[in-house]
Length: 561
Image (cartoon, rainbow, N blue to C red; front, side, top):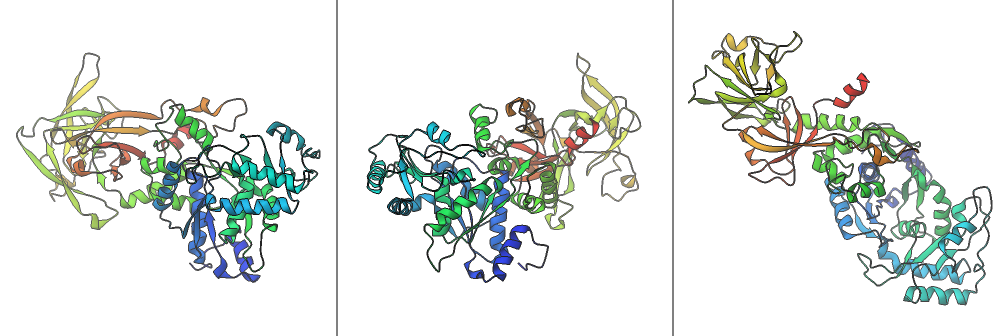
């Protein structure tokens, strides 16, 4: 991509400056480094698009590296899900790497640190070590084990690796400075004992490297040129560089860490811990529940990779954190689905309509355009008969002049069909309308070319023929949280803002052309919104998830407040 096509963001300015200062373009390499301890969410999508987008822009390779150093929380299930998500977004990685690939090298380097007097084994418990760290305004104090001899440290560390000691008995710490202004530099922990089976290495290791020790050294081993992290790692940069100082060799690419702001999103949470809580407490039905902000949940909800990539590119990256309204994501989604989703008829809350002057034993096929945005999509045929379904909300016995749908004595056009007039209605014992009797104008058929077919009426309704309609299950989703920032309240738990009405399951009726619809197929139910076939759907028992409406319903509600 030509770098002059648009203005550069600050990350690209960093790269451009490095290139001007003699850095070889051939040495550029980026990486996306998720920890496989959960499913990726919408925030990760921005990071994916950043790193792989830089790869596309500069013609540079991008690694997918799994920072798998905590077997207590990491699983192969998450690895597989992450790979699927990145591929689904349309990106290809150059190398698939794992921090666990480097366990032996990291261990060997730790041995070197001990031999150089730059690391020691601390036998205190975690609480004591934390207390000795001091505060941002008060220096820390040295561990009583800080001056252990090299030989004792080597023996203890090798015993740790051999499994001689229990979890928590010892840690290996870097010997830097307990008086450093950056508390992360106050003798950080490099290794801890953890007797857990690893999803790749099994029980080969019982000591595992900490993130700070692993991340920069992994970047170096992979010859990553630029390591982009979110702002919470800004304070880690000094330690990142210190660790690199201990291992970097001449004529090797030295990775550069730089930070960008994490994107927060309204009406949701993206903390893996909190997402896991939603799953474990049954608030949602798994990581890919369509209400979840996970990429797999968004995919199941019906979001497209094109819309997510466009969304990430639209919000861009910044140096300061802010909250992005999720309605912007829906905007990019509608923009894409409007171009590609076939138009169909689906009635969500059916009301029976009988056209009394249409022959009882007659039916016909009406032509309907599949997608006006795509002429190549062609046309389909829809059955029309005496007995139809329309939406309950599309009929009122009496209504004011601003109600342009069906009312007694009023006329509407049936989409792609005829003009009908409501003559009477039938009610149940509680006074609810359960059927409407209408007459139709046989000369008003859409596209017939007659004078009556050109007659204008103010309302147009969607419908399906009762006899041929397919009965389906539809899941209507709303925002999972009622508050724009559910995890930003000190006086309340984020779970207090869970929307009790975030899911409604209904029985609906759709036109018969959908009989062959399969998982992941997108449709626009005319006048109702965009829907996608769910993974639990069966050929004779279709399930549709509502992806989004044709417009932002929440914006209308919020403007009324």
